[in-house]
Image 1 (tube, rainbow, N blue to C red):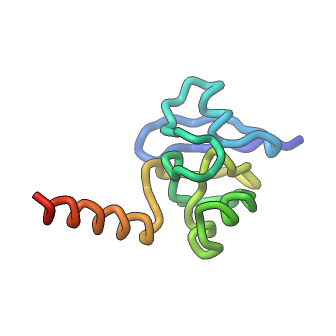
Image 2 (cartoon, rainbow, N blue to C red):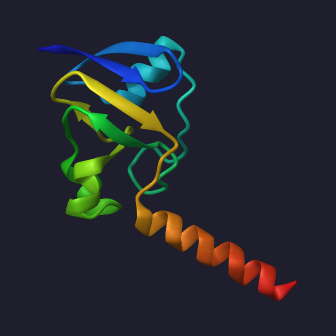
Length: 111
C-alpha cells in the first residue's frame, strides 16, 4: 500500500490517502468538507479538477465522465490517487457546465 498527499487548491487543506482508498473516503475520515451525494459516480457532486497528479477511476468513465474528461477531472467518490495530487474542488467538465447553463436558461425562459 502506498500513501499519497492530496492538496486542495485555494483551501490550504491537505490529506494523506492510500492508493486503496477513494479520495472522498479519506476526506470524510479527515473531516474535510468535500461535497458528495450518491457516492457511486452518478451525481457528479464530488467532482474536482485535477491540477497535478494522476488518479485511477475506471468506473467513473463508465458512469459519468468521458475518457477525455477523466484525464482532467476526478470523481472523488470513485478516484484513487496514483501520485501526489492537487485538486480544485467544485470544478466540473465543460459538458456538465454547458448542460447546467442550458437548464438555467430554459427555466428562465419559462418564467
